[in-house]
Each structure stands twice: as C-alpha cells, then as structure tokens.
Amino acid sequence: KQLVFSGVQPTGNLHLGNYLGAIRKFVALQESHDCIYCVVDLHAITAQLVHDDLPGQIRSITAAFIAAGIDPKQHIVFNQSQVPQHAELAWIFNCVARIGWMNRMTQFKDKAGKDRENASLGLLAYPSLMAADILVYRATHVPVGDDQKQHLELTRDIAMKFNMDFMQKIRAAGLGTDILVGDEPVHAYFPMVEPMIEGPAPRVMSLKDGTKKMSKSDPSDLSRINLLDDAETISKKIRKAKTDPDALPSEVEGLKGRPEADNLVGIFAALSDRSKADVLKDFGGQQFSVFKPALVDLAVEVLAPVNGEMRRLMDDPAYIDSVLRDGGARAGARAEKTMKEVRDIIGFVQ
Ligand code: ATP
Ligand code: MG
Image (tube, rainbow, N blue to C red; front, side, top):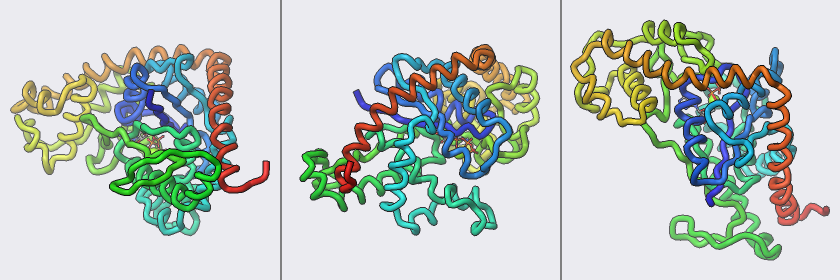
C-alpha cells in the first residue's frame, strides 16, 4: 500500500477549508492507503511562539480527525513533538535546502508580512520541517490544500538534492532504489512525493474576501466557518458572506472573475461530492437568495455530526492523549528506522 502523510497545525479553530482541503481527504484515503496523520505542534510555534492553550488546541485537532472518521487504530494519529526525529531530520534538511529556496516561499512572505527581518527563523525554515515530517516516513502521497503546493515542490527539491549529493554513500550503505526523475535515472533514498490536491474546493476562500484563503489565523471570525460553529452561526455567516448582485451562471466558465460566487459554488460542490458544473445545473439562473439557504442546509447537514462528535471527544482528554501517545510510539518506531539509515548515510557515528 502507498504511504500517505499529512498534518494540520494546532493554531486555532479548524474551518471548512481545513475540512474540505485536507481532513475529508484524509478520511477517504484510509481504505486504499496506509496513513499517518499528524497534529504538527512544532509548526504551530513558528508564527506565534506563546499560545494560551496549546494542549487544548492539539486535542481539538485530534478530536476533529477522529470525529471526521479517521481510525487511529488502523492508521496513525499523533502530535509531532512526540517524535523528535522530525526535528532531527529537519535540521539535516536545513543544511540541504538553500536560503534562496526559502526566501521564495509565498507562505513565508504572507505570514512574515512587512517586517520580515523580525519573523522567526523557524517561520523561514518551516518548509524544511514539513519536508522532514513527510520524508522521515518516506511517505509518497500527501493530501493537502492548494496553498501547500509550493511547499511540496520544495520537499521534492530537498529530496532530490539529498539523493544527488549523497548518491555514492546511499549506494555504499546498500540503501535506496533506482527511480526515474523525468528521464534521469537516480539512485534515491528519499521518494519524490506526489501532492494530492484535486477536488472542487482545493482552496476555500474567505467568506469576506474571495481573493484571500480561508484561514485559522484570519482575525475575522466571519471570514470562515468553523467546524465547531452551531447551525445558527453557520447560517449567519453564509447569509453575510460577500457576493455580487448577479444570478448564478449556468456554466462553470461564467464563474470567472466572480471569486465569491466561484467559492460558494465550489463549497457546495465539495460538500455534496459533486462537480461545480453539476451544481450549476441545479442553481444556474438562481439568485443568491435561493442558493445561500440551500448551502446553509447542506453545510449544517454535513458538519453537524462532526461537530457533535468532536465536542463529545473533547470531553475526554485522557482518551485523546492515549490516542496521541499510542500513535506517537508507532510513528516514532518508523521514524527512527529512517533516521538510523540517514545518520549512516551522512556519516554520523552511532
Ligand atoms: P494557519 O492560518 O495557521 O496556517 P490554516 O488554516 O492554513 O492555518 P494549516 O494547519 O496550515 O491551516 O493547514 C492544514 C491543512 O488545511 C493543509 O493541508 C492546508 O493546505 C489545508 N488548508 C488550509 N486552508 C485551506 C483552505 N482555505 N482551503 C483548502 N485547504 C486549506
Ligand atoms: Mg496554513
């Protein structure tokens, strides 16, 4: 079975973007893949060092994973800081990656804002920890939202440079396999990861601004639908969501240049497991006054069970912590196997 890895930061309220772009895909992949899902708490301190309730945030992401339908017995659910091999490999990748690569990352530019000199070094190095998260398991498939595409390209660049720079040593240690990268045969230790981004809502946008992604860290709560919002709040937020005055088009092409309409149709499509074209067959020519209430009903219907189960699980932190410890132990054993080999390849005496 192919190995899937993905992570979510415990940086605040999970929202519909996290659900449609990531968590729902995590659930779907369990049948066909071997899956490792991580609450990436080391990443959570890159943009903001001190959190009011980091343990609570970690537990709530874990609860969301399980509430959405991830099976922590069949697969692995854990928090990153319990497996120090992630940070160890990230250090090595900091020495593989080039500063210029990191400076080109748009997420760094967005999150660092104008005062870039004052951003943490960890925020700049974020993508090398993310590469380590994936490659410490030598995972090959990574379900993420569209905003993570550039980081996954960088993960491939890091893997490629490591494979090339250490090719002789990888061979000498009797490790690695021959893979084709383009037409070039490479004796590789780390695989080239495949991003899994497809679907009708790979990038859910803010309800207040169709050009900005929906984000946990957006100061406006009206910009996002949280997984823990009740039906009334979901209804209020969708009713207040920004739109244009026109009716919905009957073809997908008609959504061009209408980011808010495109976003709401994409959300409807993803929530109902249909394509946007299919949704427009039903709603083309209709006003938002008709479409929005239908979207409210659908969103409430899909999210209410997850919300209820999440709340139930969060009342039992001892259970959540036991899931994380068990997952951490199983993940740690796998990660250590890789790290032993990596230390050998590099030449660290152990
Ligand atoms: P933060 O603002 O703290 O970065 P976030 O909302 O971006 O929070 P992350 O924990 O960084 O959440 O991302 C978790 C997963 O959710 C990733 O796979 C990411 O691509 C996905 N994701 C985040 N926002 C969206 C969105 N608006 N649409 C689709 N997927 C998203
Ligand atoms: Mg993010």
